[in-house]
Picture 1 (cartoon, rainbow, N blue to C red):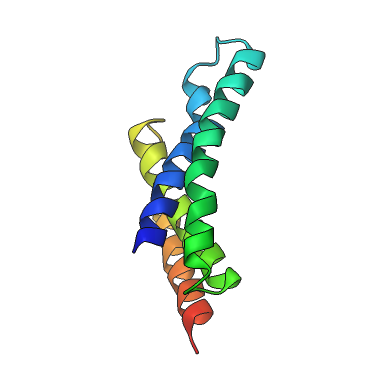
Picture 2: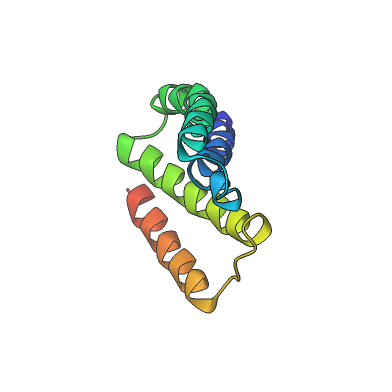
Length: 108
């Protein structure tokens, strides 16, 4: 579970680094790039250990699918709560399809 927890924290930082600036469009681009890079550094501080620790238990494909599911889950919450975007029915369908991806990646 430490791998999943580290990946979750990593994805929160990544989402803010990539999309947090969208609420501050009046800020100069060079400033948001710099701030995003600083936030992304924190993301790497959790992502790299998560992958290193997780590599003893999971394959690279399994680590990637865990990361992607967490990334899209974090983004869904972020977009609704932070960016005030509506959650639509097709997002639910996408999550069901991701569940299928997880099933097949972890199937032995």
